[in-house]
Length: 218
Length: 342
Ligand SMILES: Nc1ncnc2c1ncn2[C@@H]1O[C@H](COP(=O)(O)OP(=O)(O)OP(=O)(O)O)[C@@H](O)[C@H]1O
Ligand SMILES: [Mg+2]
Image 1 (cartoon, helix red, strand yellow):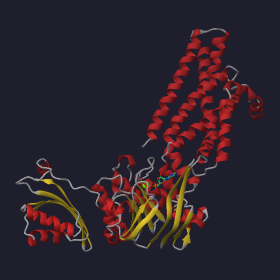
Image 2: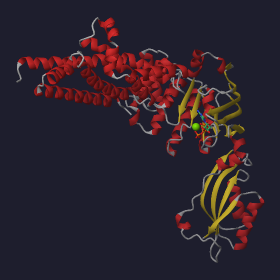
Image 3: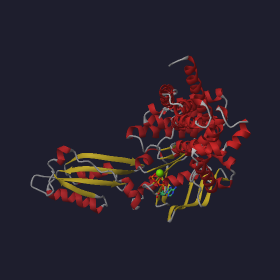
Image 4: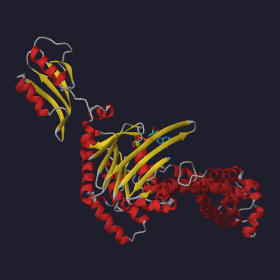
């Protein structure tokens, strides 16, 4: 049952899932973090209060958040092809995963920043700090524990998304489960995939909690 | 040095319009410790935040060393703000930074070098007496220690003015005194002008030499500490100065009767409003009227040549004699109330 080819199949799937989760998480943050910061800073009463910017950005984020992920994958196919040259495989999956998680991350970042006491921003302003300094020196460091928690949530969501992508040829544990489970029912592989996914989620949550706690001095 | 000229500020929230500051003017001289006192919601925070334009007044000017702050560009304003330190009721320390790094923040904002930062921060921590806490995080400090860190941070850019927004309101009385002493020390040693706001008269009495009273967005009285305190007619000052109640000790309160009885003597609460000296009052009762008495409690302060405060006198003369004393109080406008008989 546990022959060599099955083991390597599962390992390869796990590796691909971890790769997709973390790399797209990284790109998702690269896109979502600045958007979240701008969403926060342009809010009413904040440093760069600007109603129209905030509104437009907010609508854009909401639009992307309303697209079901499976539709987003398909809708983005032409764009994905232009970016990575193909629409199937692990690297192709990174495109919709990053773009799909970015608006989600933006909202989470905005919420993390909202938790920073307003008095701290005010103090920095009184010290003559500009918006960029306030963001770098006050907002992000003070929100760090909460940002780490939100990163765990994001990565866990991405584990799920990447499995969904597996059904349409993205690779990873999702594809393994789909092929061996749905196409030719193999209970052993199916259950192992399940256990591996659960273990991955638990591990991310565990490490995220540890890291967040480490940086929390409140 | 600092002139607040006719500033007004109106807050609009949906349909509500609220005038938080109404034509406020105040001049602050170099080296002064100026206190602004007012009830909650009077506009104190709005006023002090206007000085470094954290709150932009709708009208009026803030003139600092001849410069109109509202006319400056945002980078020029940032530069001016660096020379105005500010401390807050809730300290506002960054929880993510150690004590050392909190004090270093203003220097980092100026891109100071590591060696320079380290030298300056250690110096400042010595001033506030926290050298040994440099590597602690704020969460492990007491309120008083946190405020000391905040003071060190506020001093990092060598300001000429320190704004204190209810800096001691979250502290117990003993810690409050030590922080006030530190502020006074900073004022005297470093020559830093201080503008503080508070709702406690004790804070004002402890360190201010100039006082203004703010009520409903208007400065209703201003002057030197003695001038303001002796303006007893003003209802607001009255409320602030004599709001403390005198506690009747339990040994007396347990036997206190509401109505006079044979063998019981009146317990009188007397208020000193600066119109008679404490010693004078006692000598009148004892030497002039020859009435024996017990001084139960006295909470008296001397400001210049006047006494302020409250005392609890247990008059122990005959009913006729005691009546004479009360009449003397009334004739000389010395407020008194009979708390009961014991
Ligand atoms: N941003 C704001 N928007 C609307 N109203 C405000 C705002 N800031 C202050 N106010 C109102 O202005 C008035 C004065 O507020 P301020 O904070 O200056 O009072 P304060 O004297 O400092 O009171 P406290 O002793 O409670 O701190 C209050 O009635 C308050 O509700
Ligand atoms: Mg206030």
